Image 1 (cartoon, helix red, strand yellow):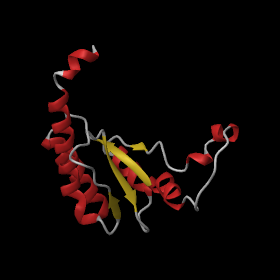
Image 2 (image 1 turned 30 degrees about the vertical axis):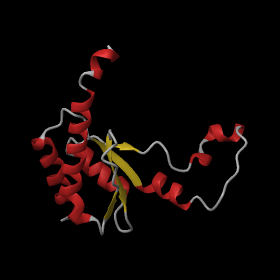
Image 3 (image 1 turned 60 degrees about the vertical axis):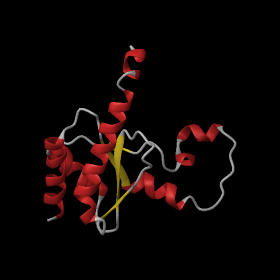
Length: 133
């Protein structure tokens, strides 16, 4: 099954990049309210992360998107030292982990599946615009 996907890998990567860029370009005007994350052209992104800035509550934006049929997911990284499994691991903390904490508290993502088309992306952009009005 996996080998069959290799023939499609380049196309999948290009479509994911196009979807990422489409969302980025569509919601970039809201960067005072949200922080957007860039990626390398060499990357094959699976998601479009959004970090909520002060004045934008992640839970409220996520709830609005989900009510409108747009699936979201929380970032599964962030401040890993707060995870219960870390109680069993020896580690050293360098710094205050402020950025890791911010990602954990304020970031979520929307998928950029290669089968999404411009109509899908336009809908997501429209709903984000509606939320910020």
